[in-house]
Image (cartoon, rainbow, N blue to C red; front, top):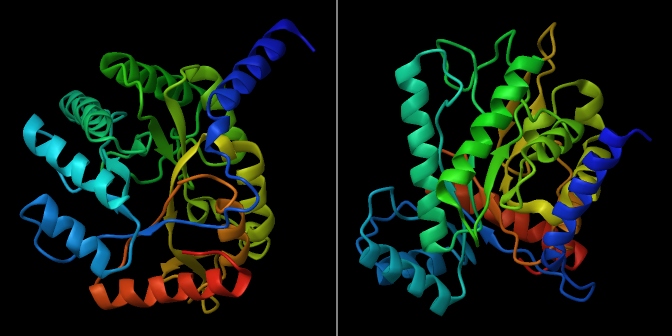
Length: 308
């Protein structure tokens, strides 16, 4: 092993060790479930009532950047009192844009969103790393997976974290099929390169099912994710995926949990080994669809002895 490899492995080990307390005991077979809310949220009490109405134990951050300190503190206190985990603050933007103004605005959004996550006590702030696609902020592009773009991702990520200096939340990147991190190994490379204790992992296995092999063996893919990244995971997304059978090229489509092939038995089993790391439903059009998704996920939990 050369010196560089030894240093990189040591940095990863140190990062994992720092987050080891997130691993749950074998007896605590529980997973917090959450999702978007469709009711108007005027105050912390209404927010908590809406969460509890859906039987959720986790929530997306209810506030936008720019909220006052008093308002942030009020919502944070309400979450603590009700034992609700604020899973994540979304910083959805493109800090890798080739348009300088767009990139600067995205960087500022990431900084402000991470600061909000720190203030409100969210598990993490999450964004994609960005894209070189000039027409779609999260779209594919021939340069997205290049070494040059990888280095830029590392530089921007470090700058975001260093500017905010969080101590209790984490900045994370979401898996994407055509942008780093696009695999477990890609995420491990970024962790080593960023080398910051407040950089962690956002888990969405659907986003890295980008081949028929990954699709049909997604249980093994999920296990690989948790084996290598588990203690660093701060929040997870819950959705599903189908491989279109009437197409003559490989085409995948997102769908509601339970209507696709994602192995939720394995997903929930692995997630239950972590402590207070939520599963957040997403990308559904109506409250009724979210109710059906939650019902499915809870039914799988019941089947395998995990309390949702």
